[in-house]
Amino acid sequence: AQTVTQSQPEMSVQEAETVTLSCTYDTSESDYYLFWYKQPPSRQMILVIRQEAYKQQNATENRFSVNFQKAAKSFSLKISDSQLGDAAMYFCAYRSEWTGANNLFFGTGTRLTVIP
Amino acid sequence: KAGVTQTPRYLIKTRGQQVTLSCSPISGHRSVSWYQQTPGQGLQFLFEYFSETQRNKGNFPGRFSGRQFSNSRSEMNVSTLELGDSALYLCASSLRGEGAFFGQGTRLTVV
Image 1 (cartoon, rainbow over the protein chains, first blue to last red):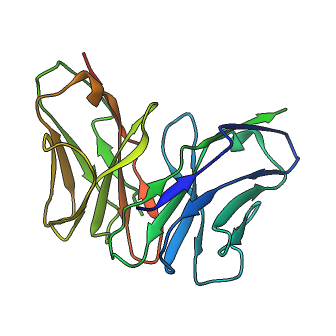
Image 2 (tube, rainbow over the protein chains, first blue to last red):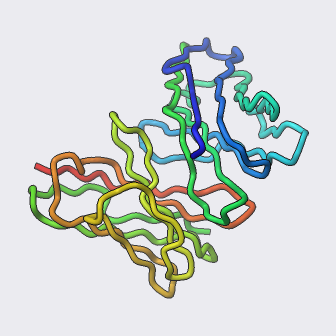
């Protein structure tokens, strides 16, 4: 089974600074998707960014970008110009492209605090 | 375009009762997945429905069941509730090639 590991339970960043959240995963598959989700206090999971494994180019969405290292099975999220609204739990997730199913395997999350 | 809608938002039930949660996916999405989120176990996959058929199932007891209707709306049922079933239940709808989009969740408290 695929496993996703987030080794940083908590992180903090000063407003306007940059922070990187780490994620590693274990899989024997070659085709898959990776995602970062944000869960603010409202509890709704919000898709931040996604990466297809077959694409070498790192995904970017405004202030959010990833560093995808397929051989190292690493998928980190960089948040630039951090804002107070970025404070939330961040979850890394994996989805297989082999099975055809849509279920996600989640990491344990990283709680991000943004300091004004 | 409306997002994923889950009802009810909050629910309090007594041990031994059963409960039904509802999820309406984004229009056009035929895949609906359910997840349980607890502080101790994190986010765990319950099951996925696609075109009214259960396509995938997580490691949960048979007390947890679901179904999907022809309009893609899905329901999840938990019978004989236990205290440990207290959790946030999240529903997500998906299209292949895209990420999963989640509803706001149903917070179930079993007393």
